[in-house]
Image (cartoon, rainbow, N blue to C red):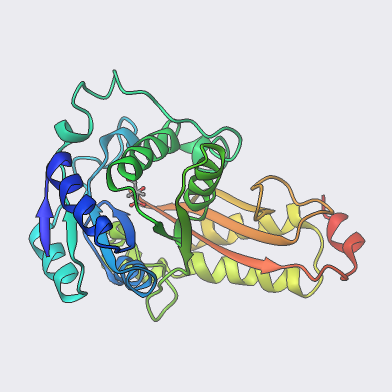
Length: 295
Ligand code: PAF
């Protein structure tokens, strides 16, 4: 595995690999790699000849008072894991390589609507930071495909829209959320949880699942389902940020055109903010009126 911290060296190496006829799969990360990241790497490896992983804790996507300084940086351990997975290229730039003129001078990529709701409302500027750095990384690496986790479902939707809107010649591949045995979605932030909090954390996924089951059984009052779920999270010790039943394509309210529902939640356990989601396909010939009346 070759590691690069400079764009020019990375691009020279990737240019040669591309000229030799290799396809390039890209997995952008912020490091502190766990099985969830490695599942993304395995997907990229299945689909492409060369796997490029980036590790960059992107300051532009952290708001004031968020965990930028505390975010775990574990480059040596990450390198071992990537090497063991057969990754050929690691790109680990410093902040000055990505933002040579500083972040305030950086052109910003903004995806409207999809980026303004849910995590976008509670973390203003967060998705602009994500789409800006992902655009830069895409232009530096120029991959054929890029792989993202479905745990960050809103991020995945926003990146897909950005790629479509900007006509970027990159196929975006989503990979199902990797979970611990008790259902907790794997996340680098799980490491912040105390033992007590860790035992409560799977309740987030359980609450999402109960909501999905209720909808699948025909329960049609979405507002009631959302408020019941928020109450259940509060009672379990979470501070819910949002619990929302949305159209999986638009992330706005469910309508009669909705083909798939996404149920998305963000909640804090102490200082740790956890997010998760589940989805439910609607049978096009199902009794739509039943579901729509919930709104
Ligand atoms: O999902 C992440 O880890 C980050 O948001 C990403 C896509 C690497 C951009 O910094």
